[in-house]
Image 1 (tube, rainbow, N blue to C red):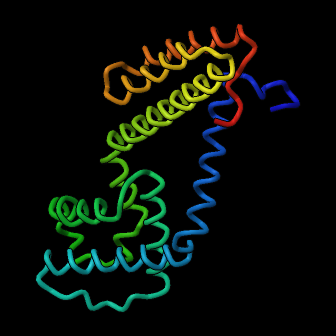
Image 2 (cartoon, rainbow, N blue to C red; image 1 turned 90 degrees about the vertical axis):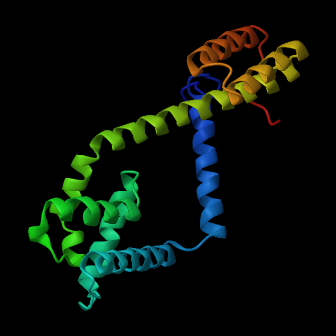
Amino acid sequence: MRTYGLSENKRVTPYWDNLQQAVEREIFEMTHKVPVKDKMAADLKKYVAIFRQRYLQSTDLEYVRTFTPIDGKMVKQVSKALADDGFTVDEYLKWIFEEFLVENPKFNPPNIKWSCSGFVLDKFVYEHRHKMKERREVEARRNEMLALVNRARQLMRGFVAANMPDEKEKVKELLKKLRDEGIIVGEFRKYIEAFEAQLGQTGHTGQMEA
């Protein structure tokens, strides 16, 4: 960013700050939470437990098939694929037993390997493509909101450095309105851009520590 003169570019710095925060969050989670290997083992147990429970509810029979290493590998793959698309194992298995198998009884009784097949997963994703799109849009709006809030905080730091307390309070009020849903994101963005232009005229950027 410094090489190309972008270290003070207001269209770039908010995303850089978000990236820094994301990296810090990931580092914190890696050092304070369950290791990835243990998490995958927990996800595997969860998938099998839910599958067996729903199998019993659906067929009145216990699931007695031997769980193989191949089954385990497939469960891990489908769990990751679902998480990447914003879905949970609970949602997936609920759909399999309460919708797909009801409409397609020829696939009864199911087994774990079948539930992880590309055919079933692709069918689930296809039928939930609109929900997946909505979730991605919600995530994109959330990321935009976080970037704007970060820019507002930078503005307050900049106004403090420029000895402009009134402007700082105005930005603070804007943040409060946004929190209370008293202003829409588009309007909030326009105010932030106007304040950034005002602050830019003073030679301050707000890129210092709070």
